[in-house]
Length: 73
Image 1 (tube, rainbow, N blue to C red):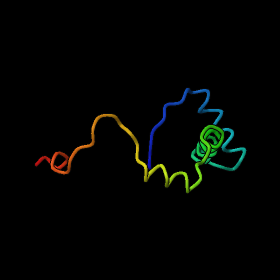
Image 2: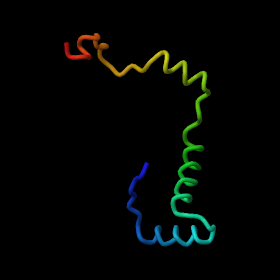
Image 3: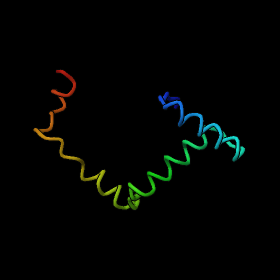
């Protein structure tokens, strides 16, 4: 997916220099940085835990809709 980010000029300049030094691209540096942050902040759930959460569902408040309510009947 494409996205646009607004960086201060000094950070963009330093990023371009770092990319050239590493023979890389700005895109690759941003992806590596995000992956590093996400590894530290969000521990990956075991597949069995994730499936159990999906089966149980999430309580979003209120009462579940009936089929007719959901389909506007």
